[in-house]
Amino acid sequence: MTAAPLRPVSNWNLPNALTVARILAVPVFGWLLVRHDGQVPAQRWWATAVFVAAILTDRIDGDLARRYGQITNFGKVADPIADKALTGMALVGLSLIGEMPWWITTLILVREWGITVLRFVVIRHGVMPAGRGGKLKTTLQALALGMFSAPLWTMPFESAWRFAAWAVLWVAVLVTVVTGIDYVIKALTLRQTSPRAELKRTRRATEAARRAREAAQRARDATRREDTT
Image (cartoon, rainbow, N blue to C red; front, top):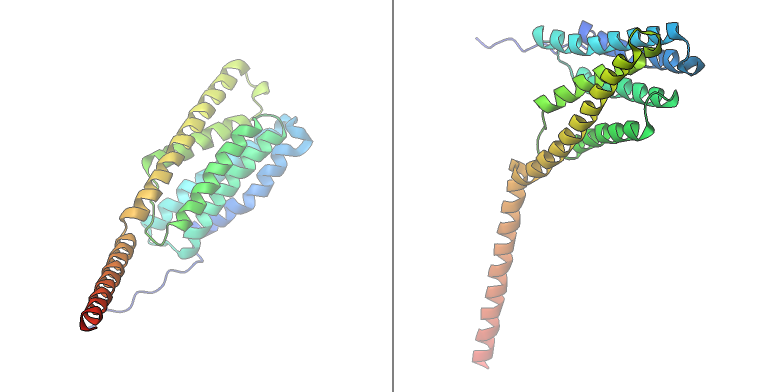
């Protein structure tokens, strides 16, 4: 008896709905964050709430998709886009209202999108999975951005909160740079050690050997012609 074919997973599921909701939350969060130059505490708290809720959906949709077998190609593409959009909006928005230096925003964005492009460049050789360092980087970035999104000047012990926010941010920047370098090294190694790379080296070696044999044969033929003359 042949087994029944597996039914394809529908894109209409809860994990994908949460991913789409996270994407839709990006402009809402950005508007709340930068409106009135971020000087209205109530709006900043709402922006923080939207950011935290969106970050939580990132963890929830992945867990649900794996637990109930609802992993789809749409989710694989949309989920990292939603993450990058939310993080990017937070970085740019915080820099626009003067909460975060532009060089930090630029550094993190270049790293994030650069690694994304790098993944696509080497995808023919294999998939680079997210490591523990990447997950730690994401957690630290989310924590730092959430803290800076809040109106810290309205909180008791403001200086202590700002110190904590900056401490988390500096650690996040350090981990972001270190993991970025690690991904580049892994990508270069993958290009050299993947089955595709090995096959290309084998083909080049075979082609070089064939050309060498042909050159040797031509040399022998030329020697025979000289001997006969």
